[in-house]
Length: 334
Image (cartoon, rainbow, N blue to C red; front, side):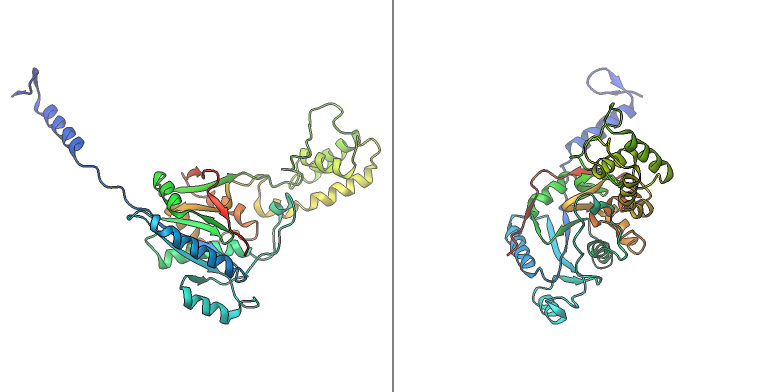
């Protein structure tokens, strides 16, 4: 049997497929689903004025949110014991605003060492902010089990939530990781751009510097590579290195090398996986759920932001998106 469709004839199966495809084209487009964002702000008890500023700023942004979008902001806090606020002040603020979540742990971290050493530090106890982030994600899994996206923000920074949510909507993905990204060397002498060293250039270093560094990297290969050793050797013995004392140079290089041992052992790699640095980041449901479900077993004793790269390294097929420049703004300190 044949069906006439205007030009020649076509089998029934062809006509059926044509009708179905035309029907799909004529169907009205489904409305875009709204973005429901959970905002976790890691804060210290002594930063009350910063929290007040953030509350005021987020409240001012609320009318600009599209009707189908939503955002819920909560401050995740450590223990108030021993802080200026104290337990009584913490309870009072919690009752007034209803947006504080106490996850315990230390209230704040000690200052980081200067320069590249900040990335190599491994502390005896968990970093306060790393502890707070994983506990906050675990809290969301329990108390907001239907969450879709999570913004993590420091209490010293502000982001325009309506614009951010529009950006998330444009990059809607269950595996989203939105942020400013870096890959950081975890070896002594690396990442110090002001000290350029050319390993292959003639007369770039003295014979004694070369011998010390070759022997050093042969004996202890982790924590410092050959180029990093040359950076340290030039720092230990400035100039052309011709007047370097071999023993003094070796002792100086060994002392510097020792600062890289903890990171080499703790991380087991010379390069940190891609991690979101800066004031904040956004995670989709999959990576946020992975961290929240495994919060008891994740590394917490290294630099908090960089640890995120190690947490995410175990998750397949993440969708990395860079924040546009100028997305975050620093809050005034008072």
